[in-house]
Amino acid sequence: MTTRSQRVALVTGAGSGICAEVARGLAGRNMRLVLLDKDPEAVHRVADELGDRLACDPLVVDVTDARALESALTSLPDDCRPEVLVNGVGGDTRGRPLTELTEADLQTAVAHNLSSVFNTTRLCAPAMIAAGWGRIVNLASVAGRTYTRFSNAAYVAAKAGVIGFTKQCAFELAPHGITVNAVAHGVIGTERIREAWQDKPAQWTADRVSHIPAGRFGTVAEAAGIVCHLCDEDSGYTTGTVIDVNGGLHI
Image (cartoon, rainbow, N blue to C red; front, side, top):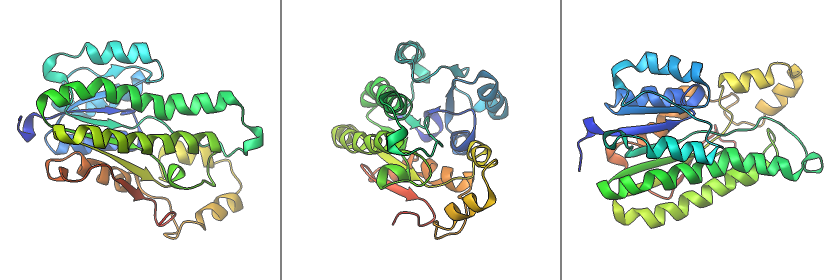
């Protein structure tokens, strides 16, 4: 088993928001980072910030392109293969009723939120099995736990799939010293969410915030903190869980 200071963590969607903050947090826990994002400018900005905590150059890949993702991950040198994986790509801020959705909407939601998690996990798991240690954290959503006022049925279905996938992987990988957990965030005040809501009427926003018992958005730091904990050494007996970080939106 390698020591804590040698752990390599791969974070997808690391160019912004919750996952950029997760990357910072894991760097602060003495992990070496592999950053992955489809936005080259954003991911290199985070890479510049982390400096010598990087295990390799950032991977500029769209995780919905399964072939490109497999090429990027299988090309990693042995000393850059992750023992920690944070699957953070996904999201959908389009609040549309079922009757306005098409099958293409479902396919898009699955590609971004579920297929990406499936492919990244299956590609990273063999090295973790060989090492006899691993941490996988999938970003689900409160939407996958219940229903949503903030998105749509296609997104709910995809995030519910992430939760089911998490539980099956936890069962299969536990004998190899690998934990697999999901974090189901509620409404987090990322730049993306604030941009999506900024043109909405004030009453529209107030109505949705009123349904959150905490009465506010979560912060990016609050969203990232539990993810980082699940990546650490002392979370080894926690697996197959879904941890809710939602201000009481779903209890």
